Amino acid sequence: MKNITVIGGTGMIGRPVVQALHDAGFEVTAFVRDEAKARKLLPAGIHYTVGDLRNVHDVDRALKGQEGIYLNLNLNLPDGKHAWHAEREGIDNIIAAAQKNNIKRIAIISSVVMNYQGMNGFNWWVFDMKKEALEKIRASGIPYTIFYPSTFMENFMTTYRKGNRILLAGTSHHKMYFIAGKDYGQQVARSFALLNKEKKEYIVQGPEGYTADEATDVFIRNYTREKLTISRAPLALLKFIGIFSNTINYGYNIIVALNNYPEKFEAEETWTALGRPATTLADYARTVS
Image (cartoon, rainbow, N blue to C red; front, side, top):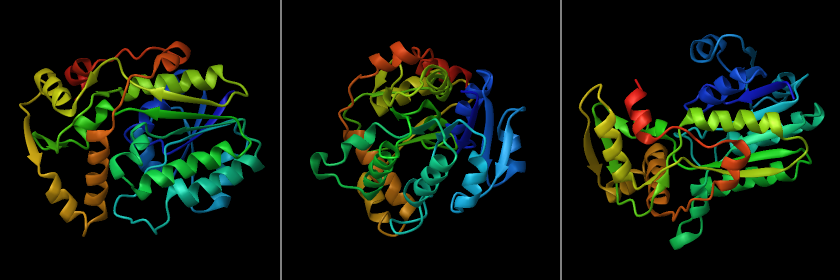
């Protein structure tokens, strides 16, 4: 396999995947809405197709002459359950175009924490949507690779960090196996190089497990560019504000799932097949800018 289209390549985890695919020698085409913006974020030497995932003709054009596709379909946080979503209506357009263009493999990033759905009475439409998207891919007849990552280290510089503070909420009851985007991207690239007609699903985890408090302590101790402190938001307050804000409601639900999902280390098969992650959380904190 040589030619791969990436949908969702400019985001926090899409970028290291594009970089890893490019470094591994694949011809990468990024399907984007704003090429000028994307060129500032992605490596030189990749190709671009401009379009909108809502338009099946745009998606069809992006997949012409391609062999594989990688999907990172983010939720538009301000939108609610009944809006258009990439992982619901968008996945239908992608599969239709993939079948039309004889795509040889679909790879998609999902989430290990969505397995919290149904535990302790937890029920969230976002996790239902993610599960339904995967069922559509399994039923497409196209070989697929599904990745279920634990929490990404990059969240410390984006989701968790607010100025010089790391924001936590609630109590983290179980360890999460933090993974660096760079290591995950290399695993994705290896999967495209190794797999042929297999249908594979991989748990993606890093080398160390921490609760949110333990991980924050490690990150702060090793991040030397400036002094960071911890702030705590009452989970009940987030739940209340979430009644009026889809974005806050998303944050509340994902925090509840992360705090309570009993994650176990299950990445042996992934490490054997696709390589062991090399980056520790301390490594990441020391090197991130």
